Image (tube, rainbow, N blue to C red; front, side):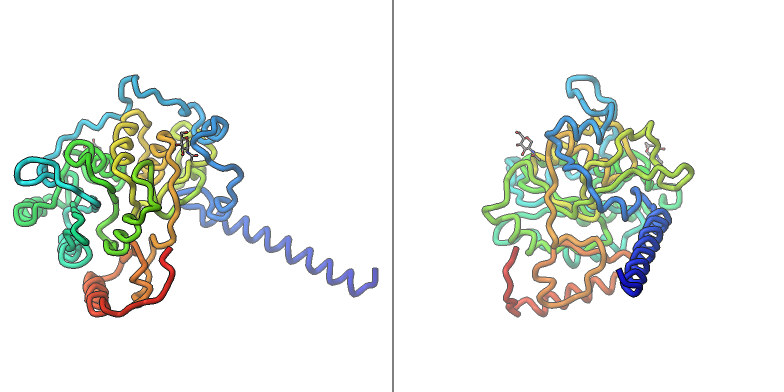
Length: 353
Ligand SMILES: *[C@@H]1O[C@H](CO)[C@@H](O)[C@H](O)[C@H]1NC(C)=O
Ligand SMILES: *[C@@H]1O[C@H](CO)[C@@H](O)[C@H](O)[C@H]1NC(C)=O
């Protein structure tokens, strides 16, 4: 080997080593809610809910849940504000509900709810298929008690508020989703599809409808979202630390980004039932993934769900299902909505899915 070649190989070797070391350090630094982002990209096994080996790796001693044993995670909270007839016709018969959308919110986000009612949450039907949009709230935390009166007024005006009796807090978000699934089980068990999303999103019902009403979409055992595969954060003292005693598995089962996911009605009902037997975890998205895994349902990924902000474009927004508007002012969402209305007649050429 001549000297020049040797130098080239050696340089390459050093560069690669340096790169790897940087990646490992970086992945340690960006270790967040879930394990290292970098390592999470490499999934070493299929995470198949039907494989007993995968179940063992993921859930450890939590692997087998018996639904006949008493509930270990009961959800005893009552609905303090309710709309029990939302999914019924005037005569008390079941109303056909194509899509039920549950939006997690907190008392003080009055402006977010108003925006949603006046923009993306406003369509009550598409092509004659009913869409129902409801807000999920819990008992206000200390700073938000003054808003209780406002929420009651909103409820009287719009009849779109469900409030449950547990304390609202970030670490109780899981309870908020369980509460939504419980509501589906009790008051809207016949909904074809159920969606869970947040109050800082934009959801485009028309695009979702076109997708869900296509004949290739299953009517049962179906979940569609941004699928995340991640490990528990094991750094002791870290804000997001989840110890082995709480979650023994090396990986979490695949889960949906909590920003928005759609499921068939049976999955929503079954998730509630299985949650009663699934140990509580405050990470809402992971917890829902655990319930899905116990049910043997594998979430399918669709790239039109976004959990970051996608800037407006005429044709882009004719495909999009969800996009996040977390720190944006509500006026931005109003603008986007009026742009969409303005561009309604414009035809875009693309293959849908
Ligand atoms: C969650 O809600 C329960 C029931 O109201 C309450 O006892 C608990 O303190 C809440 N947890 C947090 C972290 O706020
Ligand atoms: C697991 O098994 C059930 C029943 O055989 C099947 O319906 C389901 O599609 C399977 N799930 C996966 C992810 O393979």
